[in-house]
View 1: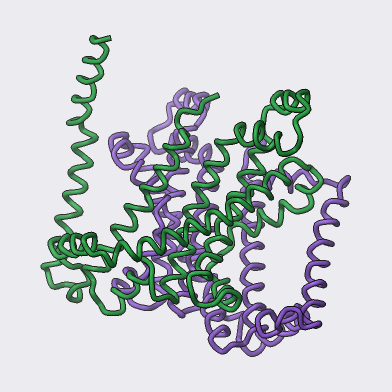
View 2: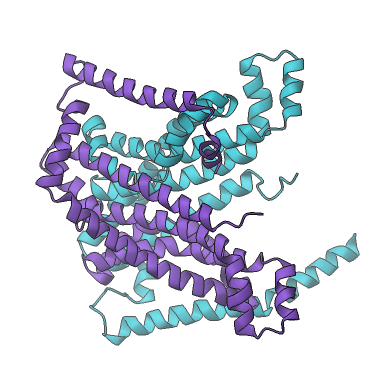
Length: 263
Length: 260
């Protein structure tokens, strides 16, 4: 045991300074150096490419201001609500379509073709229906995340091992028990994958709606920084948002153990 | 994916489910029409479907929707050409230079998951409020799938085919153009198809958000004038166009897929 432990550690150390890491560091340094050079060259309009120092300062200022966290809370609540409403209704629709061939043939193609259409264009309609407050952003996020989750769940239903379903039937499980004890555990993998896709599009839908018309939330902070031409603050907002978005995506994947599920 | 197979399987024997699906949609519209005409739903929030259908003629003749469609299509085409050229070149380069692939493939995958379109104010600062901004957002948002699928296609070339090339003593260039590229083409096109869909979504979205350009701007324009029936009709038109666009892309993909 001790031997293998040491061996892997040695291997890790070797990989740490391997050519791949070196190349990565070189690329990052190259990009940063080019950026800093452009910032000081005067070739572009002032502040279009602000210096790294001012972006760093803006980032620290942003993360230490309570206003940022309050707005992040608003956006997170909107996305959470969108994911809950859209996700649960999509789960139900997905289970129904996945378990019934006739309904799947009748309706699934509509979902399939409507799924990848641009959702933000529904925003004027959502404002009309739900007002200019957070409700219309939640509605847009819900609309965005419904389709990928529903399609993923319907596909997952059809991939469930028939033996598991027969086991449930032989135990005379009722519909609710079937869903709770057989379907949901058996298709956690496609569900988590669907939620991951859904989170991505719900986030985009909600934030784009916020940049279009709102007075709070991260989208509002970004567009506010843009309209006051405070470029360092805008970059800081975007960097923080991208880190959060990619991190949340990776976290759901990790929590769902997408890597560990192997059949 | 499974939706596609469900669609594909629908042969001559099962018109019934399709008919039920279509009938449901028609009935839903009729019920909406009825509720609005009865005043249960305010016609100042949802215009009756008949009025929406009626205003199609108006948005075609008065709002020049044809020209706007061409503007958006042109932007998509420009972004599509760019993702195809740069995406395939990038993918081939990364497949050739293994070190580069190991270093940045995960970054490209992360970029694919990143909400690039949210950086649209940044693009506006760099490129100005014009068509170039719209095309560049479409390009950046749609590039990762093309790169990733190109690498996948290249790596997935069957060993037998590579060996056939070797036995014919092909040069590197010949090996690439006669064996690797044709073998990878179906997979690459999957990437291009995904990329084009992303590009279309982002381009229409950004047109709407920055109120500039083709179809997206039309919706914004009509909504600001509180032309409700027109807004709904324009949204329906965009949805229709994008659905047709996916169907065509799917056809091409199926045509490219080898039969084995």
